[in-house]
Image 1: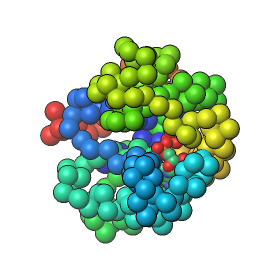
Image 2: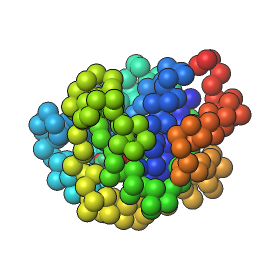
Image 3: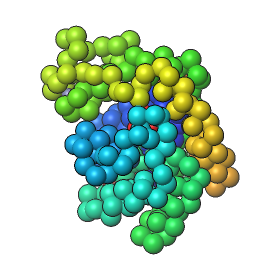
Amino acid sequence: MIIILLGPPGAGKGTIANEIRKKIEIPVVSPGDVLRSAIQEGTGLGKEVQKYVNAGKLVPDDLVVKITEERIRQKEYQQGFMFDGFPRTIQQGHALESLNQRLEKRLDQVFYFQASYETIAERLSSRRVCSQCGAIHNLNYNPPRIADRCDVCGGKLVQRDDDQEETIKKRLEVYNNETLPLVDYYYEQKILTRIDANRDVEYRFKDTWERLMELNLLKGNL
Ligand code: ADP
Ligand code: ZN
């Protein structure tokens, strides 16, 4: 299956992706993760995209599409995958459509995680990520057992540069202008499922999982 997890930053797309992966083996395609590690490693790509990411702006479409195409052509992705953070513009949506056509793949469903501004701001400012393994913690919802240390690997927990308050505002503005139009786009294609993302993760996950069952998308994966 190929599904998209769509929604504002802080809606908990990454958390849901992790919950799904506890149940079935399916890779995640997240340009944000690729870009962040490129920045950390200081590669050519990293240097090119740093200024966008740190300012909370979108990286140019052609670059992101290229990264994504490279990923989904790899062997591990041939049985299906989830997009987290792609597409983020209508143009990327179009690019995905033509890519799918070329690769003879089909997008099965788009899960739209809808959350209020209060929810988003609160989640992002209390989010901490592991600098070693990338696991996501939240100081309010799943605080680490040992302060500042990752529960999974013991790595140091840090706040992402772009989770600072000013950048959060910018990212939400970008989201509303650039990404939100994709909700209508997929709604019109009749492949959109709306999930109330203001609720706790167990409910968000339950709704998502039940919908995947209903759509028969878990066949062969369980
Ligand atoms: P979040 O979902 O919390 O905003 P991501 O890891 O998805 O975090 O993205 C972090 C940053 O990476 C974005 O603010 C943007 O600069 C860049 N980025 C990620 N995905 C895309 C995309 N599909 N198109 C353009 N830029 C992207
Ligand atoms: Zn860790």
